[in-house]
Image 1 (cartoon, rainbow, N blue to C red):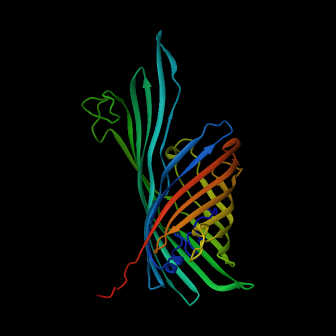
Image 2: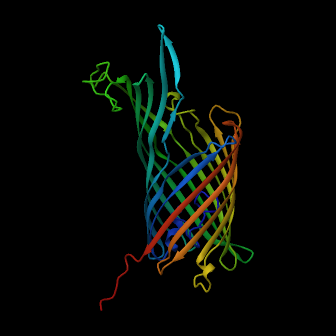
Image 3: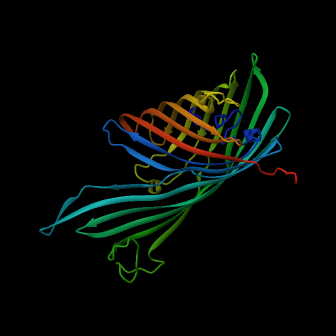
Length: 384
């Protein structure tokens, strides 16, 4: 958050990353976190496209300073879009008909993550995260001719299961400074599966957007109106991440991370929305610096965490020989308050992207707001 990282390296608090289960035992308090974020794509034409959605809801429970449990829910893909063409004229049998077309979609894939970690040695910690993938989406094509709508729709449902293994070590030093090493490897236990229900084109006589056999035409039974098909091994990804966290004096940390994702997606062209772009692989590198708040602040500015980072993304796209490359700067600010380390975090990044999907460079702006509340759980209190 604020350093351009994928989440492997601690940036929320010293030695704590909300994405890395191996760091959760360092928290003295249970943590409940949630937030939202957004992305704006600005081409040279100046016509911006903005998406805002919920980032994640998460509960973390450290146990005895050695173990940790966690549960979180987050969106993986966002399939919300809406496009409408300008009206056009059709000439049929000496008549002039006005028409236009709309395409719209909603829904996506979500992940419920169950995580835990435990020590291997005095210096090494390992953890596991199980991702349960689920969700659904709908995609409609609407043809309007002289005010009468003809609708073609498809509903998709998703399911899958993946596992991520984490390994961290605090054994080493760089000169006299502690350096913490982190790594993870992720793969599918059950590759992503997809079920498609395709509905035939129909005239929406009553304008409610759904097929009604007693009003709309042509008349179809429930069996006639749709075609069901299933696809297995739609996505079978493999991901590896490696990073370091160098602890300097006065709460100053220098971080670095590199990651590689092989998406391994096999999706029929008919099921790819819009321009049908699918990533083959994603390579990511980032370097950051964090100045954490003082444990006992004396001045107002010592209540804040200050974060900055540089990142590089390189994405390989199916059907294109050229990679999509994004470089940018990320900034973050965190405000700690309360005895239990409650915290508000703000992050902003500004990058430039170029590649085969656009003839000119695009500017990418992202923001994220996150609130974390701490509490004391599983502590035996003395009776008074």
